[in-house]
Image 1: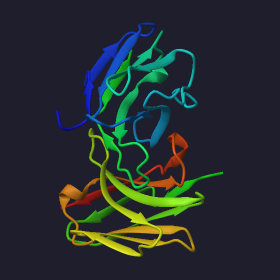
Image 2: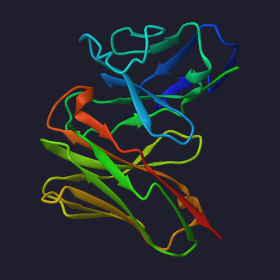
Image 3: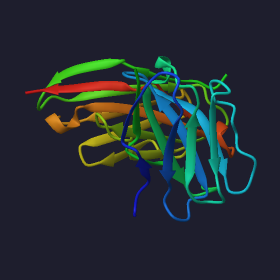
Image 4: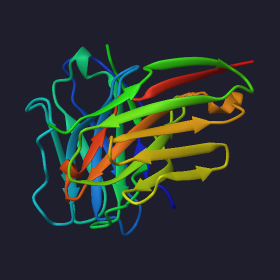
Length: 115
Length: 114
């Protein structure tokens, strides 16, 4: 597709379960970001991938969170043993590398609800 | 510490009225500043970009200004429409690469009422 695609769009899970969120960036975009947005709040950085470089994981809130990306393609964000405070919209964004004026293209987000 | 502060936090205006949103930043070294619009339940979409040498830029009814000396930007919306109801996010980029290159404001939530 032409834009950033995220799935699932909505996920309801029980506390303690694991969830996996997927992001398919725009083809050719080497940079990929994951953000968390709690209801009524701003975007909170989670993790950044740039090509084959080691990812910047400095925003991950705990070791229950992890993310992977194979090359310059799909990325998955995994949350283990979900807690109610994990309820939020998880946004993925991609952009071309090295472009100082590069625009971030966001997906529509995955809304996670932990009961 | 690199920071981006937006004001007001929220704003309610009547349809047809104008409004101005503010963004102050302490990010350095500055590369560019973008305003994004985020409709409810959607991902943010870029409205405009301001680089160091630009003072004013328009995109339809949206006009962004930048004062690099005082490190302030504004987004002016003219003749507001119901569809302008959204959150407006200011994002400042550093002359850097990686995730540290981007600093997000918390956004201004605008509600346009009929």
